[in-house]
Length: 68
Image (cartoon, rainbow, N blue to C red):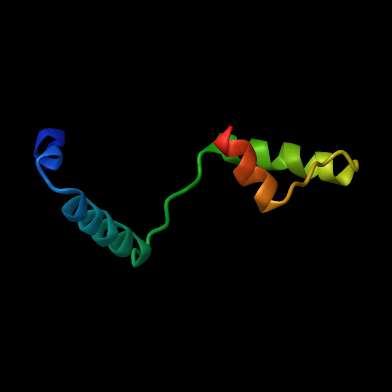
């Protein structure tokens, strides 16, 4: 399916297709490997937490900062 074909679909049709894709992916036995940089970011964050330098915010604060 091309982007041009997707653009001709209604919003509801595209959402239905997206749901089908997510559903099919969630039942895959073969897992996708995370890129190496994911591990690096997680390791950096873990070190910050262990040093007491980690910053934690509430979901409400996160949502409000995303709106700005």
